[in-house]
Image (cartoon, rainbow, N blue to C red):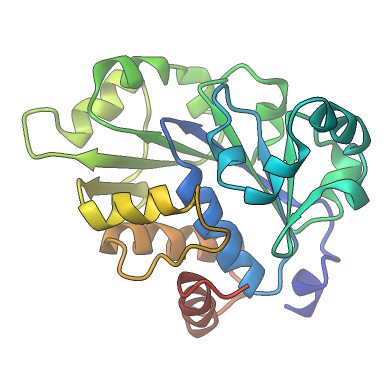
Amino acid sequence: MEDVRNGKHGEGIQVGFFGIEKYELLLYLSRILRQLGLRVLLVDYSENGALSAGIPVWDQFGGAGREELAAENASYQTAVDYCGIHFLRELMVGPAVRSRYDCVLIDFGFELEHEAVRECSRAVIVSDQQLHNIHRLRHPLLWESMPVYAVLKDMCPCRITPDYILEEAGVKAEEGYRYVIYQDAWDAKCRISCQYSKLSPFVRISREYREFLKNITKDLFPEFTKSEIDRAFRAAEKGEC
């Protein structure tokens, strides 16, 4: 366990997040992993930059300054520091960079053909019930190449079921890897707060959100006990850095 905490276990695990807005999942998860003493890198390859909007310090590098910083960000030392979590936008993360982190979490948006996808060991697809979003996730060969978590959020009870969504998207997610999150005003409030507050708390988010975050943490780093993960979750959800 000490080797993991000190980043000595080799090249970091790379997890790809695909689909609709999911920046809150990456921010929550990165903070939990950070509380476990892990070194975490967040990367935004998405088409809309939603994750970048959730990193308040990124705003100070706007305009031309952003391009100048990006050119330097190929090295570990110049990544934007977000409360101990490092962040890059658009730049490729190769083995040399991954080896400096325990976990690399990437928001691909709907960029399913991005060259960095092939380096991911797990995928998290996020969708709602809207058909145009479901169809944009179609890529059977990709979803068959790695373990897939399916997070179906902002759901409302109707004939558009989780099974239908996954079938239309061509995703085969086992029962224990599916998370159905129904529309919830508090979840929405916490999500939006992520883009306006540096360490927005996420206390009292839905049970399904909690289950996903704790389960994927345990899956990525099985050496941590349930009590350690629970303690890390409690600290992260309170907004502790």
